[in-house]
Length: 265
Picture 1 (cartoon, rainbow, N blue to C red):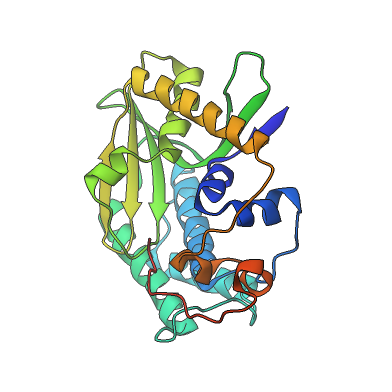
Picture 2: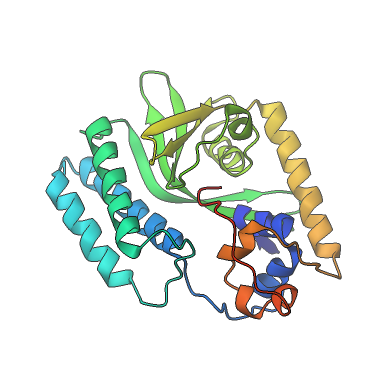
């Protein structure tokens, strides 16, 4: 049985060579973490804590939240975390996280919205034989008692704000909604909700059962392509600036190039 994830599939589509380094060669990354990944991880942890405490009938104060954020930032921070953008410092990213959390707190307190679970692990059988499975984690799963709908929430710390068209074609949360329908019924409505924290804005999208079935078929086709792939060419792009394997990547051996400013894409 092969287990895939959306990030694994997405990596193959972005750069087959990076996929090979990560999943086939199991190469040790040259760069352990970027500052954007560090920021996103800590902010996610804090938001998870907020809702866990709210389920236990405790609403954390904003001071408690920022203290928890600060402590975890320092605990998980190391000097070798990559900061790609020359015009940004570690302190700038730290302050961004504070801004995200304060805005979110003021907008969503007291956090009583029917949250069922945070960081919920999901599994999807992509084929009837169970040869391929997809695994993922939902940032927050909600049952909305007013609308009688399940909600799949996802937090984004990216600076850019996508178009509705891009959201409506997003695969990750759509795949997660398949798992929710498998659990609670294919007749249930599932709303996909992205929280773009830099803009204090949420964007919603929905999928029909027909669209989800088509997505499953497309995902299986992509996995078949990956399984059959023998050569893994590189795909040089601005994303290379944030690649953990760039320092030793064969595509960059004879060239030094600064990444373009695409933070948030």
